[in-house]
Image (cartoon, rainbow, N blue to C red; front, side, top):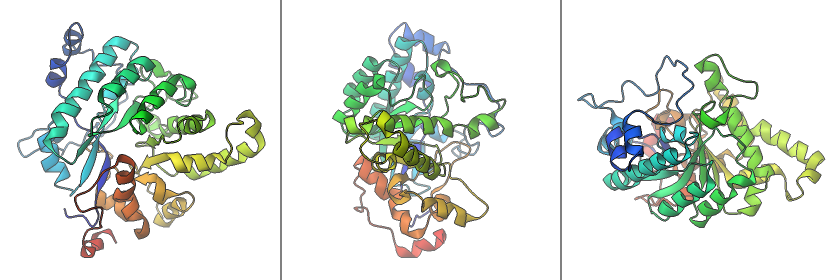
Length: 370
């Protein structure tokens, strides 16, 4: 499918087959991993759609996401994607395991597979570096191991946590990331497991539908914490990427944030400007899952209420069940925003130089996005 735009996909989920990871693990971790000790598990909710698309298979029936060659041929080529950020989904649950040393060892092995075995397969690939965030020394060590690798473009952590990410406990992680000019990204899916506690402020949802709808609450808590704790003042070059959390909640939160700052600013004297200004300068969001109101004009109105053209980056969430294809996502945005959202913002953040130097593709292809 030829695209009217350059495309940088900021959220692709490669599979992580067992054997390559096990081969990188020393004992006793290898035996535990091969025996099924994979992390902190899941909440156990039943999703009628599964996790991954049933049709994400090659003609021979192999899962596309489990092989870097298949992913390049049957996904990147199929959707004319110019660059893709690989975010290993299964590694996030390890970031909340109470078994610190085991979890950190498996995270390191998965990072090694992604960086040393996946990135060389296709020049379009970039990698997010996972860390175990609840032991900052181990997280910092992992960043120093891989942070200078040219294919590593950000540090990724689970959006579930046992404390808000703005708190000073996590600041050494941000200092290490800033040293390599790497953004910090968070990704959902682990709320309620391991060290994170209940997945909502009022306890445990009764089904997947409820749990999935409530995931945005983690994003709100972390973003407010990052601003309030002065993270972006202490680390002025740091960017914070909210992957797969939606976008429509941003404007009303910023309104509330700014209003409260005017009355309560003496509690955070280090904030010298409106909170919304720090958010606009330091926070980016990926587009999937896009909200889909019955009237598309309502979504466009939301986009006018914050600096969407600066803060949004396209993502598919491939191969997950609720992913967004490039043509579907592009149609959702006003034409004047599409270049920025589909590739420009990501190129700037991740320092990606596309082969065509970031120029839009032939205008005649625009018709498919009308």
